[in-house]
Length: 96
Figure 1: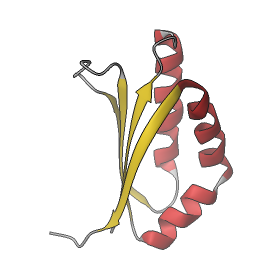
Figure 2 (figure 1 turned 180 degrees about the vertical axis):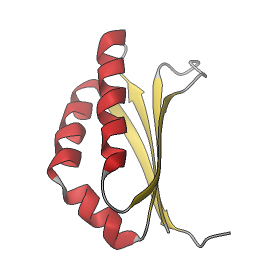
Figure 3 (figure 1 turned 90 degrees about the horizontal axis):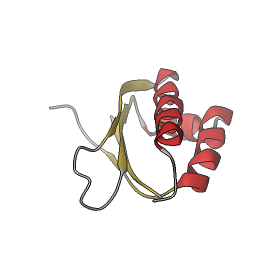
Figure 4 (figure 1 turned 60 degrees about the vertical axis):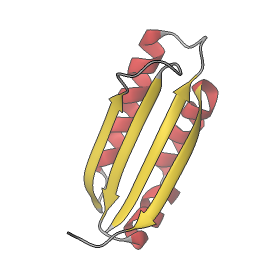
């Protein structure tokens, strides 16, 4: 399994409807082949501002690489560059 976690720190001037639209676009990325688990949520902790959490699991690193190179991912990533800064973490994990 391959894990992919992203924390998007939404810029302060972004409106709530823009955040909602971004969340829906991010959720749509979880329908791709090779995605075995996909969660997109707005963090309930707002001490550091609005943070969108992306937590995904892929069948393997190859599935992740295909997903990452896809047109849908590139389009959503481009949108997110306009409204947020982010940190991501990616790693291989073995099933429990």
